[in-house]
Image (cartoon, rainbow, N blue to C red):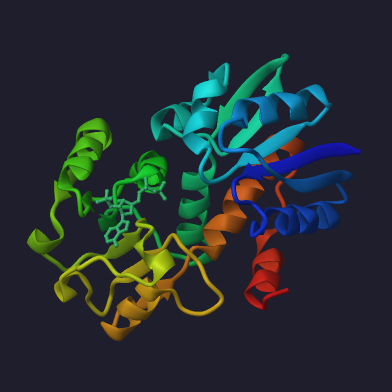
Length: 270
Ligand code: ATR
């Protein structure tokens, strides 16, 4: 049977085996998908051993996405821009890296949530790897502008410099933000520990669509914050997780799974 896996550290919490298991069942594809915990100092060796052993493809999660970017022989254009790789496969005997995170975010917002990004004023909160990974796919949707706000403003300025040639991208400190925005996306890890970046309330209006790239069975801290400020639509990142997985599945198998039933099952806590 064709073997796939997610590599991370820690990885036992990963929902990827469940998601890909459901995709395989739904599409009739015959494959096995497991989770591999790589030692922090031997990610490359773990990947090499997997492919030497006949493995067909890997997903890469925290903290190895930047390392995965470094070890591949070839990268997709979007992975090149993201500076991180979340999907590995072999092409003509060479290790190829792609990044489906941005596609996952855009598909969840535009298709699942039905929110067009074209012409919108977007606030992106955070400037770490997660945000860098989604910048180019967001800009491809043709928003009016993206403002990147981060605790460490110099990191937001770096992103504005890198991606400014693809669209209107500017950097801002939290306290200098002028609202409201049409779309506010949280890409900080603050939500994981129940923290909210100190955003002015004025960034939210009743029409604002808010999205937390983190997810949780209950409202994340950011979703709760946005709801309390009257945002029109509030969404967490479970759909992004399922959509990035579907995009990886498509790369590996050439079949695009139906994400809706998988997302519904995960929402129920299955
Ligand atoms: P990831 O790969 O998940 O993006 P990262 O590169 O470490 O992880 O980036 C984490 C992001 O969350 C950064 O934008 C970080 O802000 P700094 O660049 O100033 O460190 C942001 N972040 C983490 N905890 C935060 C908090 N409590 N308040 C505000 N921002 C926070």
